[in-house]
Amino acid sequence: MRQKLFLLSNSTVFGRQFLEHALAGLKDFLGEERSILFVPYAVADHDGYTAYIQDALVPLGAVVRGMHTFGDPRQAITEARVLYVGGGNCFRLLKTLQQHQLLNLVRERVEAGELRYVGASAGTNMACPSLRTTNDMPIVQPLSFETFGLLPFQINPHYLDSDPNSTHLGETRAERIAEFLEENDVPVLGMREGSWLHRNGPTLRLEGVAGACLFLRSAEPQEIAPGTDLSWLLEAPARFDQPM
Picture 1 (cartoon, rainbow, N blue to C red):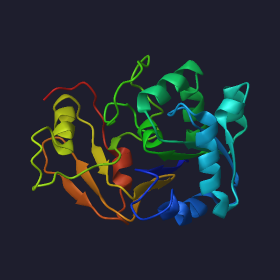
Picture 2 (spheres, helix red, strand yellow):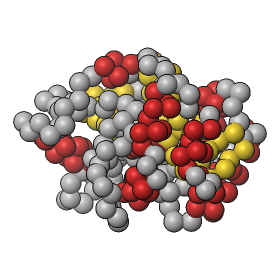
Picture 3 (tube, one colour):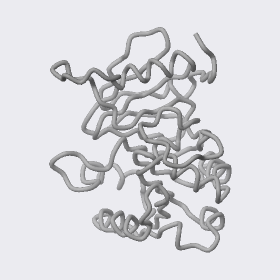
Picture 4 (cartoon, rainbow, N blue to C red):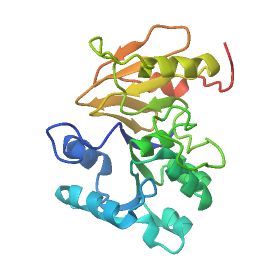
């Protein structure tokens, strides 16, 4: 269990600049590493997105290069020490990763402790076993929902609590996750804006400026405060396609 993961629910918190809330945590996570391979596939403008990330990480002295600038993406992964997978549309991101045959390679290098993984939003979804708990619209069709599987449980980034004063009568986020649990016996961590997960080998902690809500089959949702040790989730069983 050598994985080093830094998984953000989101990149922007109200009242702060892009990634400002997480810069101190990212600096600690990166250690001495300053060269970052960025995956911009979740949005259409790869150059613009990469430049935006580079500007945001200037305070850390980081040098960011977009995956799309390499003729051989697999070679780029092989040589990288830090991989940052940005947010956007999960379906577009996954389809492109599949087209470049990157899923197994990234998984192998992260599990070996050779590659540090930073994910934000869609990039955080990719760290789960499956895409099934994303909030995104399927604007393209990937070959499957299988993702990197760097964690054994699911995450719902940008988790929103229901507003008791709202007149909206559609499904709440909690109801959608409950539907997922009717068909899959897999923990789901609903990460609120401003939260992130930090994994260092066998240790997993929720950090950031906001908490999370943990959903388990046949149990009431649990509130998770920043600073909580969630290492036990790394051993939790995950059973997909197991209806109640």
